[in-house]
Length: 103
Image (cartoon, rainbow, N blue to C red):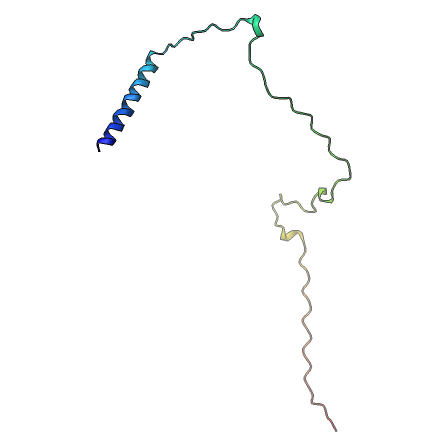
């Protein structure tokens, strides 16, 4: 426990020293601003300008660029847009088996 207490005292002492240095620091800058004659002053953009975007390749539009046959923005349902397929006819009834005569 003595070791942990000593570590806390050291940390507290360092914190007080840093706080005192902060209080004693000057609030005003100690150097004058640069004159306008030296470099024009002001910041600037150090980034390179963006190169122009390449032109898109030519060619015909893709087939998926065609508009859809049906728009889903209306109040109706999607199922109402297409008629229901007609139901298939039922399969014919199976014929009864007649035993064949073998002679």
